[in-house]
Image 1 (cartoon, rainbow, N blue to C red):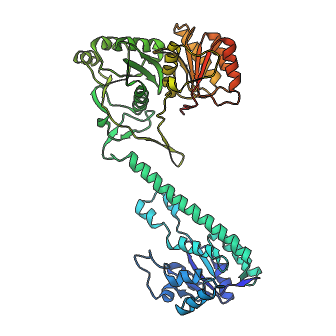
Image 2: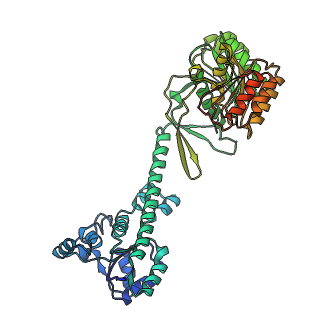
Image 3: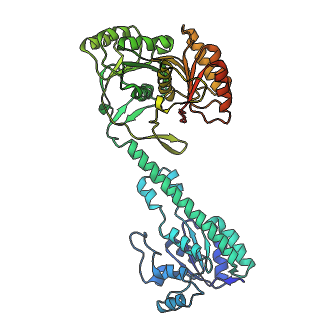
Length: 508
């Protein structure tokens, strides 16, 4: 049964497309309540309007922030026409029914997109309007709600066809659309505040800005917002660039895996390690790291976990590199290393890093926990007939640490305490393995007895078969493929050991 509309509350931001609906309401003698600019617009169409202030007996206050938030408005929408007690209360408090609510919310998203200042954006968060929509949608049994100017034409046609009334299912459909509109609106507001919070977190020290030589390329400006002085003392060299800092970040995160234990050295280029080694002395660790790929080491970033001594400094001084990071430098080592004018020397301070990673993406940001997990021998599950030897297990632990910090898809080949080669950033894991094998051979490494680490599972046995043919004797991988058994069987056939960790370390 069609239910007639006798009264309507109309309060919209955009007035375009509203005229035909106003004309229809006027034609059917509907009592119209309205506010501010909407009231003036309706009056200009020749329709009678009752100001909401006249209904409530209370003026709009706080610059228009509070207009419709009143029991006489919400009571008129929410009271149940089929409940005798509601009807008695409405009569007692002189609350007239409101059968139609037409609200076009403040343009919050449009204001954000315009680049307006925050004060203007906050003022475009609709409070009364969204409350009116929710109230009318909740009481759809008695009230029709129109939540967008895109609905004006359709609702005008509906009311024309049904002689100024609506059916229950009509009202239910418009209620669903209203709740969808309020959900979208609240999501947009929530997203804005989350982005602002992340931005403020990232620039908590916005007064501490370090201008960079340039961004990723010379035509891009670059700035670091944060307290670099809390992380490093720059002892020598030119101004840091954007790319320097990106590589420094990758180097620091990688060396966190080797903070304890033997002296360690890592050489990075474009955020990937081209040499990593541990040894009984820092001098040997550096030489072993350099041997991995002396070509890529040229112009790279180097990090060590122990103070730099004179002997190590003298070896380092033979190589052109951009940045050297160490917890300390001997005085004699500094004298040697400062002989090159532009070489950047950073003394790293102990500092707690954030627990979250935040990155701008598309028109927003993405956030994730840092990958703090690293698997050791205690986490290895042997899945082959033979288990890795103690030396192979040590090598697998070492390889996995490097693998975690290398761009996916990646394969890492290593011996205990030394990276031999890696395949990085490949679209195929097979290509990554082939790249690693080729590089290892190019720099004179015999892979017989070496180990292999993969950042994700093997979908086919081909990687195992290629590695086995190259002399690899043990493999660590997360597992989880529906064809894990194929790789396990290939290892058994080739006499190789395989362990699984259950933990993937993609790095995009």
